[in-house]
Image 1 (spheres, rainbow, N blue to C red):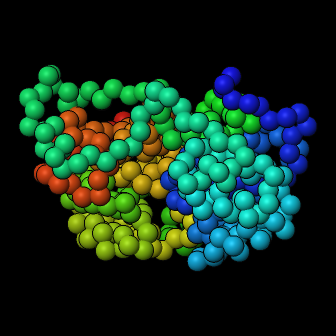
Image 2 (spheres, rainbow, N blue to C red):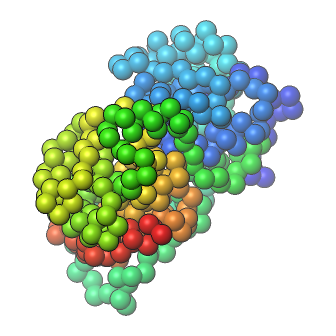
Length: 377
């Protein structure tokens, strides 16, 4: 960070952090929030966050106050509320013009964010991107077809593609607070639940004390290219149940209820103890229910990050996305098992596969069940 100008001595007294818009991204901001709290222990830190994520931050020690953005609330309204808050520093975690305009309208004298087109003029401090890191880039269909047609240089099925250090999304957020003099080194992402949260979920869904559960999250909001086939989720869950005698808790949002019911029907005979939680939990209940699982088998999606952040090992088939950028927990944490087929076209970052879905079809149910059993230990 030697190339970046530090914050003047004395520091801010009232800080607002503009939070991100999605569950998984929000979890990846928690190391930066902890580091910001370390840097300014006496400052009041308010998190400006979409309403749907406000309960994620209940009792979180890195922040003092949550300022939710109402569903459909406009930029002018948010700016007026920020002005009333009399903040003297804004840290903008997302890259978007709207976040810069909110802080500018809020008359916050110091506005810090990453470099981004159409927003830089709204900031007082523009933090440059780190050099030498991987970037998310969608591949074209032409590029994908060229990659899969090329003869392989060697058998790369079991070896991950090369990665760049500090490419993970959490480092982007850490770089922003590092600009302000905070320690830019990573911490494990962490979320918090209370014993009362957990007991409430036990009662609601019938999780008996002492029972063991495998969490299964077969959906992914971004698109079908991130979803390992449902029948393979079922086969892997049955194999784990047969070895461990565990129940199966099926997670997901409202859009995943159909997936959850189909999966439950496939499991009914071989693994009769199934709880469908998809579409039936609040955000606090989701976190609490995840803590009751021994392992969570999931696609690359928000509950994957949430499970790792409450201390539960995850097993994740990765296809169209990159664990170098969005792995759960601390990058390289051996408790989490991230499985890839080693195909040349992945990651493509597309919502739908334009060819034959080889990135996910190359990951087998026995392979995943074995990873779950290793994580179970």
